[in-house]
Length: 205
Length: 205
DNA sequence: ACCTGAACACCGTTCAAGT
DNA sequence: ACCTGAACACCGTTCAAGT
View 1 (cartoon, chains in turn cyan, blue, green, purple):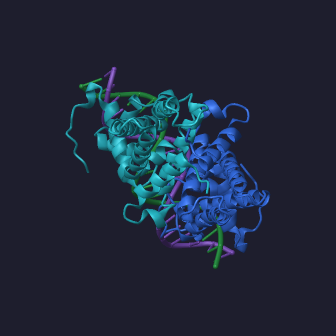
View 2: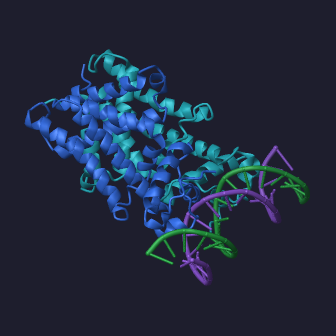
View 3: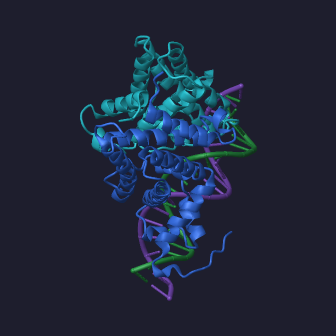
């Protein structure tokens, strides 16, 4: 099918080539679950070659998810940089970036949160990058608490709260569970902002 | 392996037997992705028999997820019934039941929100049961708005907000993404309550 | 009507063999 | 050191054939 630039993969770049091929694959596939043989084919090597770089299929998936977390963190970091210092505004930007990433990479996000993150001992690198994402949020929370704009308490717990809201909104949106709303023009941006704002301001009457 | 009661499945109950076997399977498997042949084996029929009742593997998974939503809705309905009329208290009970269900059935919940709900036209029954869950929440929101305890606005949107928070917390918990907190005794109950309460009261300082 | 058994294409994994 | 090709066990799906 493909005939990629036929670089000589005997130089030690096969590992990254496989990860990139895997990312492309999962983005297009329309189905979760990587196909190891197809990924190898796309990378231009035999189906046995990946085993020189990954113990098994799960290890390749872990590496793909790891790259997914890196991509997501980069998007979020940029969203924060492009926003002024107000913690609430930064949280809004972050929520928007998070949902946007999920909408553009639904199958990747599904895989990123579909069972491998459980095995923390087996995939420590994967855990590390997810922790980096956590800290991006925690920094904003801590800053907000210092200026008194955000309520006191464990910044770790508040970070969990905010991440839960962002993540839940992202998943339910890409799973079409909010379709009556998200199918409208601008509906996705609208509801994700409502989610974050509701959390910041509360639901009391 | 198994030698189940050898009921005569020629009576038309194979469909439900397969669904139940699938639920057991996904609960134990420790890996998402149903194995159709093993499910058939457990149900005591040949690997081709399921095709008399399901168009393909995805249709079986859809039926399993449908049953999953029914089980979850039942848990939540009961949690609401066991709570007084205060909307906030009911939301707390609901959040607790939601997280608890996810903790007890992590692989099922993963599957329930891992890609099939997207194909609404293909699996309308699956969409219907997820909508029923939505309405359980919306009823509480509407009641809270009538008594003025919950803020005005689209009850549909507020329901999306609440569901996002519950779902995000549940997923991040079962994915061990909050492990420093959840590994403590009572940590799961604690953080899920903090999530719901934060949403109800807001994060302002 | 409902199920079986063989068959086909395909995948994950292993391993001796190639350069 | 890194990759290939054949081989094995297994899965999803189909279909002629059984009762």
